[in-house]
Length: 484
Image 1 (tube, helix red, strand yellow):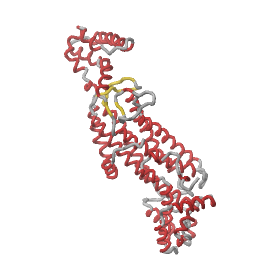
Image 2 (tube, helix red, strand yellow):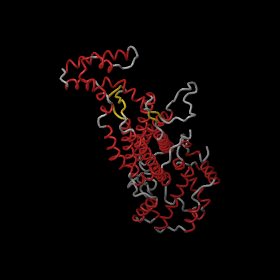
Image 3 (tube, rainbow, N blue to C red):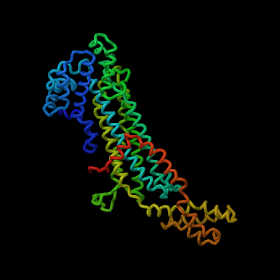
Image 4 (cartoon, rainbow, N blue to C red):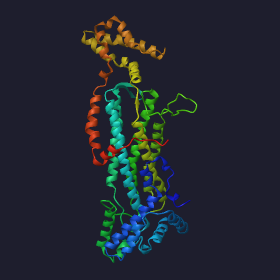
């Protein structure tokens, strides 16, 4: 296994965005380690340790590794069986004036843990921006179809009508909660800082001749220079792995949201009411040329299930950290953390692609409404008859008999629902026959769905996307293209 392979995750970064793939690349990881060593040296020099300007300058000039340095690091790691010390040595070969002070007072987790927190914070920001774009796209869809009646389903059985746009707000509301939860996780994130081998800062206290104030200032400086507002007040050798639990929880929750949305779309595709984008040359099946499989939504479900399971991995790791630390977290986290973010990134790209090309078939929707609405309209018909002086019990019995006859036509003979035709042919219903078209207008069955859509988009979605960070992401968000 090469030095570059050591930190690769099983999930190919080929399908992730360039930003996310680069963030978890070996090049960026070791660049970040060097940046942290430089930050530590600058802070230590500022607080009085004898570190030369030449050492600082050489470190600044050699933050990026070239191919030769990767080879040196690989050879050193094979010899030393320690990745951090291999890179300390490798850094010293290009910054010889700093070779003696690189990693001064630090333990390996100074670079590994602090780097992970930097990656996590940046990755959460990337996820937030992509999620905002998806929310924006689905909000446009909800607005466009705010008042298009569609058959509602409970238990996947026909229920009262809703609208296509109202259904989309159910997806959006969960995405807004994901946006909130992911932002909370990012904004709550702290820094490990400089804490030493068991978190006591003993090595730094020795470096500064017992000066507690300078040790605290060193921790503060390194944290501030690394872009964090605070460091965790106490740590062991590592930052608590419970932080990983708190980070992966909202990602797993988003996975559940994405899976629900994609499942709804797969069911709608089966009903031929709404379809995901389908390219003109796309093949749905190698055997059945007519098929239009919802492969994008299926991919979302597939990856979302994987994303949901990774949270359990973090819980397991956090639960078995003995005392000040064990090493059975390391290999697990090197896979789990990058894979969680790469997976979430791919799911978001696919979800954006789907949301930007959804195709709605109003005539199919209307036809399905027509099959079920006559049964749903029976109560309206009864009430209309009562208003014209009819007897409710007799009206109920008349419509009940006709309903069963129509149901027989549909279920036993495979014919269309002819309940309304039966009503029109029965003289008992003469008093309200001129009202039937109004009583059967689908828009009279959707309640406040359009108004709910408008209010939700104006009072919840718009304020959430008005955040300057997210607004900029939405405004420059390009159309999502899938590589395959």
